[in-house]
Image 1: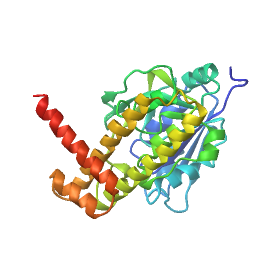
Image 2 (image 1 turned 90 degrees about the vertical axis):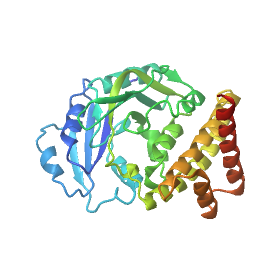
Image 3 (image 1 turned 45 degrees about the vertical axis):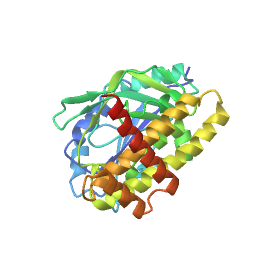
Length: 320
């Protein structure tokens, strides 16, 4: 059980005005009252302060950066916002996502039930600009070991606003930085999941699916940065798996390793191929040549990618 009524900090890096009011309202309407909402205006050209000033709530705090940080380094802005948090737990909110009114009350109940766990994930739905539901997370166990959480990749929504982090741990690790924050949400979650993950059974978070996010943009510069980020993430994850084995040897089983580094790693390479295809042409072998020529992957990875492509083709042929 939690020894006292914990304080939660919503830290919200703000830049866009369109959905900001709705996001703020969803946070201030929480049934659990012991929280603060810290809004950090990232030198937005839009008048965000006027929106904030329409709310008269002592739990709301507003700061404005002298210059834009997130435009060049999104994770740097996240970590800058973290310095304002005073709570026992931290939620990295966004200026367009929406929280269910019971988000915090469910978090309090689950952290009381699993006090050693350092990470909570709210079951999530994605919504469009009109608030219509596009997709819903699968239902998972209330508590998961680290290895089981790894297996959820590709089955649940990516993102970071649906997590609740213990501030003491997050202050040590910070939000993990990769170019364009690509994989930074997954990496930060995995960093905090080594002692397990608690997962709400109710849908408590709505992720706004929008192409206006920095990581959603697909120009040539961004694509190359995403490739670098993908390689960096998988190198980081290999180290993290070794750490997890030391903490709990039974947790990282062979089936988890097989899934993530044969199936999921295959998907990673396919992601790279798809990203590279934005550079021109959709022919797989042209893209593969381009990847090798740019020395984006090693010779071993290059051979593995060819193997997986042939294997995928043979499976298709013999399954007809």
